Amino acid sequence: MPELPEVETIARDLAPRLAKRRITEIARLDWEPMLETPLATFRAQLPGREIRAVGRRAKWLLFTLDAGWTLALHLRMSGAVTVAEATTEPDRYTHLVLELDGDKRLCFRDVRKFGRVRLLDAAGLAALEAAHGVEPLSDAFTAAWLARALKERRTRLKPLLLDQRMIAGLGNIYVDEALWRAGLHPLRAASSLSRAEIARLHEAIRHVLEQSIARRGSTFRDYRTGTGEVGGNQHHFAVYGREDRPCPRCGRPIVRTVVGQRGTHFCPKCQTA
DNA sequence: CATTACCTGCAA
DNA sequence: TTGCAGGTAATG
Image 1 (tube, protein in one colour):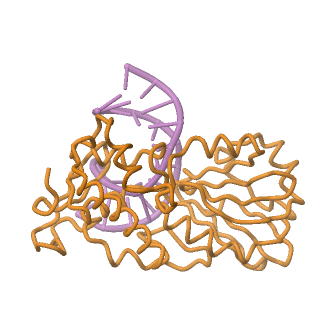
Image 2 (image 1 turned 135 degrees about the horizontal axis):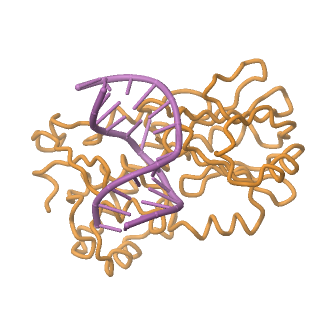
Protein backbone atom coordinates (compact mmCIF):
# COMPACT_ATOMS: atom_id res chain seq x y z
CA MET A 1 0.00 0.00 0.00
CA PRO A 2 1.45 3.02 1.37
CA GLU A 3 3.94 4.94 -0.66
CA LEU A 4 5.07 8.50 -0.07
CA PRO A 5 1.69 10.23 -0.58
CA GLU A 6 -0.13 7.84 1.74
CA VAL A 7 2.43 8.11 4.55
CA GLU A 8 2.56 11.87 4.11
CA THR A 9 -1.23 12.08 4.37
CA ILE A 10 -1.22 10.05 7.56
CA ALA A 11 1.56 12.16 9.07
CA ARG A 12 -0.32 15.38 8.31
CA ASP A 13 -3.52 13.98 9.78
CA LEU A 14 -1.84 12.77 12.94
CA ALA A 15 0.43 15.74 13.66
CA PRO A 16 -2.21 18.12 15.06
CA ARG A 17 -4.07 15.30 16.81
CA LEU A 18 -1.04 13.84 18.56
CA ALA A 19 1.14 16.84 19.34
CA LYS A 20 1.85 17.05 23.08
CA ARG A 21 -0.03 13.85 23.82
CA ARG A 22 1.64 11.37 26.11
CA ILE A 23 1.85 7.63 25.48
CA THR A 24 0.52 6.17 28.68
CA GLU A 25 0.57 2.46 27.94
CA ILE A 26 1.28 -0.24 25.36
CA ALA A 27 -2.25 -1.57 25.32
CA ARG A 28 -1.62 -4.24 22.67
CA LEU A 29 1.35 -5.80 20.95
CA ASP A 30 0.20 -9.18 19.71
CA TRP A 31 2.54 -9.76 16.77
CA GLU A 32 6.02 -9.48 18.14
CA PRO A 33 7.87 -10.06 14.85
CA MET A 34 6.79 -6.57 13.79
CA LEU A 35 9.00 -5.10 16.50
CA GLU A 36 12.57 -4.44 15.37
CA THR A 37 13.67 -3.08 18.71
CA PRO A 38 14.32 -5.31 21.73
CA LEU A 39 11.04 -5.82 23.52
CA ALA A 40 12.58 -4.87 26.86
CA THR A 41 13.71 -1.51 25.48
CA PHE A 42 10.32 -0.90 23.90
CA ARG A 43 8.46 -1.64 27.11
CA ALA A 44 10.88 0.30 29.28
CA GLN A 45 11.18 3.44 27.17
CA LEU A 46 7.91 4.00 25.34
CA PRO A 47 5.35 4.46 28.13
CA GLY A 48 5.49 7.97 29.52
CA ARG A 49 7.00 9.53 26.38
CA GLU A 50 5.40 12.65 24.99
CA ILE A 51 4.82 13.01 21.25
CA ARG A 52 6.47 16.21 20.06
CA ALA A 53 6.00 15.93 16.30
CA VAL A 54 4.80 13.57 13.57
CA GLY A 55 6.60 13.41 10.25
CA ARG A 56 7.78 11.19 7.42
CA ARG A 57 11.07 10.04 5.94
CA ALA A 58 10.80 7.88 2.81
CA LYS A 59 7.90 5.54 3.62
CA TRP A 60 8.58 5.65 7.36
CA LEU A 61 6.14 7.40 9.66
CA LEU A 62 8.14 9.11 12.40
CA PHE A 63 6.92 10.17 15.83
CA THR A 64 9.42 12.46 17.53
CA LEU A 65 9.27 11.80 21.26
CA ASP A 66 10.87 13.42 24.25
CA ALA A 67 14.21 12.28 25.69
CA GLY A 68 15.65 11.88 22.20
CA TRP A 69 13.57 8.91 21.10
CA THR A 70 11.77 8.43 17.80
CA LEU A 71 9.02 5.91 17.19
CA ALA A 72 9.23 4.74 13.56
CA LEU A 73 6.49 2.77 11.80
CA HIS A 74 6.72 1.23 8.34
CA LEU A 75 3.37 0.25 6.84
CA ARG A 76 4.78 -2.03 4.12
CA MET A 77 1.90 -3.54 2.13
CA SER A 78 -1.23 -3.38 4.23
CA GLY A 79 -0.54 -1.16 7.22
CA ALA A 80 -2.78 1.67 8.38
CA VAL A 81 -2.24 4.03 11.31
CA THR A 82 -5.09 5.96 12.84
CA VAL A 83 -6.06 7.78 16.01
CA ALA A 84 -9.17 6.40 17.64
CA GLU A 85 -11.21 7.13 20.73
CA ALA A 86 -10.26 4.99 23.70
CA THR A 87 -13.79 3.60 23.68
CA THR A 88 -13.54 1.95 20.26
CA GLU A 89 -12.17 -1.58 20.34
CA PRO A 90 -9.56 -2.27 17.62
CA ASP A 91 -10.22 -5.31 15.40
CA ARG A 92 -8.14 -8.47 15.22
CA TYR A 93 -5.86 -7.06 12.55
CA THR A 94 -4.73 -4.21 14.78
CA HIS A 95 -1.47 -5.49 16.21
CA LEU A 96 -0.17 -2.43 18.02
CA VAL A 97 -2.28 -0.13 20.18
CA LEU A 98 -0.79 2.70 22.20
CA GLU A 99 -2.93 4.32 24.86
CA LEU A 100 -2.66 8.10 24.91
CA ASP A 101 -3.71 10.66 27.43
CA GLY A 102 -6.94 12.48 26.59
CA ASP A 103 -8.75 9.16 25.97
CA LYS A 104 -7.21 8.52 22.56
CA ARG A 105 -5.50 5.52 21.03
CA LEU A 106 -2.89 5.20 18.35
CA CYS A 107 -3.74 2.08 16.32
CA PHE A 108 -1.47 0.27 13.86
CA ARG A 109 -3.60 -2.11 11.80
CA ASP A 110 -1.85 -4.49 9.42
CA VAL A 111 -3.66 -7.43 7.84
CA ARG A 112 -0.58 -8.97 6.25
CA LYS A 113 1.74 -8.42 9.22
CA PHE A 114 4.55 -7.06 7.06
CA GLY A 115 4.64 -3.74 8.89
CA ARG A 116 7.54 -2.85 11.17
CA VAL A 117 8.02 -0.87 14.37
CA ARG A 118 11.24 0.62 15.72
CA LEU A 119 12.03 2.75 18.72
CA LEU A 120 15.11 4.71 17.69
CA ASP A 121 17.66 6.70 19.59
CA ALA A 122 19.62 9.46 17.85
CA ALA A 123 22.04 7.00 16.27
CA GLY A 124 19.22 4.78 15.07
CA LEU A 125 17.45 7.73 13.51
CA ALA A 126 20.65 8.80 11.77
CA ALA A 127 21.06 5.28 10.37
CA LEU A 128 17.51 5.26 9.04
CA GLU A 129 18.11 8.65 7.46
CA ALA A 130 21.35 7.52 5.85
CA ALA A 131 19.76 4.40 4.39
CA HIS A 132 17.49 6.44 2.14
CA GLY A 133 18.04 8.73 -0.81
CA VAL A 134 16.70 12.11 -1.76
CA GLU A 135 13.18 13.18 -0.88
CA PRO A 136 11.49 13.79 -4.25
CA LEU A 137 9.44 16.70 -2.95
CA SER A 138 12.42 18.47 -1.42
CA ASP A 139 14.45 21.28 -2.97
CA ALA A 140 17.37 18.87 -3.28
CA PHE A 141 15.51 16.88 -5.92
CA THR A 142 16.21 18.83 -9.11
CA ALA A 143 16.43 17.79 -12.75
CA ALA A 144 20.19 18.29 -12.53
CA TRP A 145 20.36 15.96 -9.54
CA LEU A 146 18.30 13.37 -11.41
CA ALA A 147 20.53 13.67 -14.48
CA ARG A 148 23.59 12.91 -12.38
CA ALA A 149 21.87 10.04 -10.60
CA LEU A 150 20.79 8.38 -13.86
CA LYS A 151 24.00 8.94 -15.75
CA GLU A 152 26.21 6.16 -14.44
CA ARG A 153 23.52 3.61 -13.77
CA ARG A 154 23.39 0.38 -15.74
CA THR A 155 19.90 -0.62 -14.73
CA ARG A 156 16.45 -0.10 -16.20
CA LEU A 157 14.32 2.85 -15.22
CA LYS A 158 11.65 1.09 -13.22
CA PRO A 159 13.83 -0.90 -10.81
CA LEU A 160 16.00 2.17 -10.31
CA LEU A 161 13.06 4.39 -9.40
CA LEU A 162 11.90 1.78 -6.89
CA ASP A 163 15.30 1.80 -5.17
CA GLN A 164 14.80 3.68 -1.89
CA ARG A 165 18.53 4.39 -1.65
CA MET A 166 18.25 6.65 -4.68
CA ILE A 167 14.85 8.35 -4.46
CA ALA A 168 12.97 7.76 -1.23
CA GLY A 169 9.24 7.11 -1.21
CA LEU A 170 8.31 5.98 -4.69
CA GLY A 171 6.58 2.61 -4.95
CA ASN A 172 4.98 0.50 -7.63
CA ILE A 173 1.96 2.72 -8.25
CA TYR A 174 3.70 6.04 -8.54
CA VAL A 175 6.61 4.74 -10.59
CA ASP A 176 4.17 3.40 -13.19
CA GLU A 177 2.19 6.64 -13.14
CA ALA A 178 5.27 8.86 -13.39
CA LEU A 179 6.76 6.85 -16.27
CA TRP A 180 3.48 7.12 -18.16
CA ARG A 181 3.28 10.86 -17.60
CA ALA A 182 6.88 11.28 -18.76
CA GLY A 183 6.30 9.05 -21.81
CA LEU A 184 9.10 6.68 -20.83
CA HIS A 185 9.12 2.90 -21.11
CA PRO A 186 9.81 1.12 -17.80
CA LEU A 187 12.58 -0.93 -19.43
CA ARG A 188 14.49 2.05 -20.77
CA ALA A 189 18.16 2.02 -19.76
CA ALA A 190 18.52 4.65 -17.05
CA SER A 191 21.65 6.08 -18.65
CA SER A 192 20.00 6.53 -22.05
CA LEU A 193 17.69 9.44 -21.24
CA SER A 194 18.07 12.74 -23.04
CA ARG A 195 18.08 16.02 -21.18
CA ALA A 196 14.47 16.63 -22.21
CA GLU A 197 13.40 13.18 -21.05
CA ILE A 198 15.07 13.69 -17.68
CA ALA A 199 13.25 16.98 -17.29
CA ARG A 200 9.95 15.27 -18.10
CA LEU A 201 10.64 12.47 -15.62
CA HIS A 202 11.52 14.95 -12.91
CA GLU A 203 8.32 16.89 -13.46
CA ALA A 204 6.27 13.69 -13.65
CA ILE A 205 7.56 12.32 -10.35
CA ARG A 206 6.76 15.55 -8.58
CA HIS A 207 3.37 15.84 -10.25
CA VAL A 208 2.04 12.36 -9.48
CA LEU A 209 3.13 12.60 -5.84
CA GLU A 210 1.69 16.09 -5.33
CA GLN A 211 -1.58 15.18 -7.01
CA SER A 212 -1.98 12.13 -4.84
CA ILE A 213 -1.24 14.02 -1.63
CA ALA A 214 -3.84 16.61 -2.66
CA ARG A 215 -6.34 13.73 -2.98
CA ARG A 216 -5.25 12.15 0.32
CA GLY A 217 -3.56 9.12 -1.21
CA SER A 218 -4.71 6.05 -3.14
CA THR A 219 -6.87 3.39 -1.49
CA PHE A 220 -6.94 -0.03 -3.11
CA ARG A 221 -8.03 -1.94 -0.13
CA ASP A 222 -6.26 -1.45 3.20
CA TYR A 223 -4.93 2.08 3.09
CA ARG A 224 -6.73 4.63 5.27
CA THR A 225 -5.83 8.21 6.05
CA GLY A 226 -4.90 9.15 9.60
CA THR A 227 -8.56 9.87 10.23
CA GLY A 228 -9.66 6.46 8.94
CA GLU A 229 -11.04 7.58 5.59
CA VAL A 230 -10.28 6.20 2.15
CA GLY A 231 -8.13 8.27 -0.18
CA GLY A 232 -9.33 9.66 -3.50
CA ASN A 233 -6.39 9.35 -5.88
CA GLN A 234 -7.22 5.81 -7.03
CA HIS A 235 -9.86 7.29 -9.33
CA HIS A 236 -7.21 9.20 -11.25
CA PHE A 237 -4.75 6.52 -12.30
CA ALA A 238 -3.65 6.65 -15.92
CA VAL A 239 -2.15 3.15 -16.04
CA TYR A 240 -1.92 1.47 -12.64
CA GLY A 241 -4.45 -1.36 -12.39
CA ARG A 242 -5.88 -0.37 -15.80
CA GLU A 243 -4.80 -3.30 -17.97
CA ASP A 244 -6.77 -3.42 -21.27
CA ARG A 245 -8.43 -0.11 -20.53
CA PRO A 246 -7.76 2.85 -22.81
CA CYS A 247 -4.71 5.04 -22.36
CA PRO A 248 -5.96 8.50 -21.34
CA ARG A 249 -3.59 10.03 -23.87
CA CYS A 250 -3.95 7.89 -27.02
CA GLY A 251 -6.79 5.47 -26.30
CA ARG A 252 -4.82 2.32 -26.93
CA PRO A 253 -5.15 -0.48 -24.36
CA ILE A 254 -2.85 -0.34 -21.36
CA VAL A 255 -0.51 -3.33 -21.16
CA ARG A 256 0.49 -5.16 -18.00
CA THR A 257 3.83 -6.94 -17.84
CA VAL A 258 6.26 -7.92 -15.13
CA VAL A 259 9.45 -5.94 -14.61
CA GLY A 260 11.76 -6.85 -11.78
CA GLN A 261 9.08 -9.13 -10.33
CA ARG A 262 6.63 -6.25 -10.05
CA GLY A 263 3.41 -5.85 -11.99
CA THR A 264 4.04 -3.03 -14.44
CA HIS A 265 1.48 -1.04 -16.36
CA PHE A 266 2.23 1.13 -19.35
CA CYS A 267 1.03 2.37 -22.72
CA PRO A 268 3.02 0.73 -25.53
CA LYS A 269 2.36 3.65 -27.84
CA CYS A 270 3.02 6.61 -25.56
CA GLN A 271 5.95 5.11 -23.65
CA THR A 272 8.82 4.53 -26.02
CA ALA A 273 11.40 1.88 -25.36
C1' DC B 1 19.91 -10.05 -11.58
C1' DA B 2 16.46 -13.46 -10.17
C1' DT B 3 14.11 -16.11 -6.69
C1' DT B 4 12.16 -16.74 -2.25
C1' DA B 5 10.23 -15.44 1.98
C1' DC B 6 7.42 -12.90 5.01
C1' DC B 7 1.41 -13.02 5.80
C1' DT B 8 -3.53 -12.81 4.73
C1' DG B 9 -7.64 -12.02 2.00
C1' DC B 10 -9.76 -11.88 -2.16
C1' DA B 11 -10.76 -12.36 -7.16
C1' DA B 12 -10.45 -15.26 -11.00
C1' DT C 1 -7.63 -23.84 -5.88
C1' DT C 2 -4.43 -20.82 -7.69
C1' DG C 3 -2.40 -16.54 -8.25
C1' DC C 4 -1.98 -11.95 -7.04
C1' DA C 5 -1.37 -7.63 -4.05
C1' DG C 6 0.79 -0.98 -2.55
C1' DG C 7 7.29 -3.41 0.30
C1' DT C 8 11.63 -5.00 1.60
C1' DA C 9 15.31 -8.23 3.03
C1' DA C 10 17.69 -12.39 2.48
C1' DT C 11 19.60 -15.71 -0.41
C1' DG C 12 21.59 -18.07 -4.91
